[in-house]
Figure 1: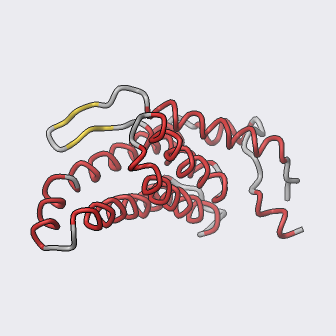
Figure 2: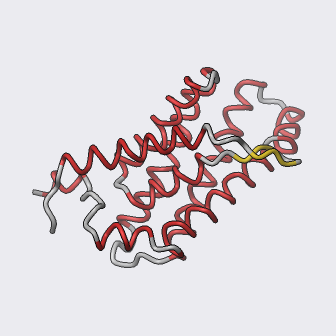
Length: 188
C-alpha cells in the first residue's frame, strides 16, 4: 500500500475543483432539448480519478462555487448535493466495487449510476419547486429531463474517452501523479 501524501491529495483535489469551475464557463452548446455544459465531463473525470471525498469536493463544492459565480445562486445548493452525490457514487464504484478491475465497462456503469442521480435529483428539485402535481411532472419530464439525459450522456462519452481511450488515468498512474485515497488513513 502506498503512503497517503496530503500535499498531493490537496493539490490534485484543488486542481480538479478549479477545472470543474473553469469548464462551467466554457460557452454552452445549445441544442433543441437543452444546453450542453462541459463541467459534467470534468466532474465524471474527477470521480474516475479521485477518492469519494475529493470527488465530492470536485463535483459538489465546485458546482456550488460555479453557480454562485455564474449568478445562479438559487441552484447552488441543489447542484452541490446532486453533483456531489453523483461524484461520490461514481468514485465509490470505481474504487471499491471490484477494485482490481479498472475497465471501460466498469467506468461506463459507474457513470450511468451517476447519470441516474443527476436526472432524478434535478427532477425531484424541480418538482419540489413547482409542486407535486401530475401536470408539473409531465412538463418537467418532457422539457427538462431530455436535456439532462443528453448532457450526462455526452459527459459520460467525453470522460470515458479522455480517461480510458486516450489513457489519462494510465499516464497519471505511470508518473505517480494520482493521490492515494484519504481513506487509507483510516486503515493504518
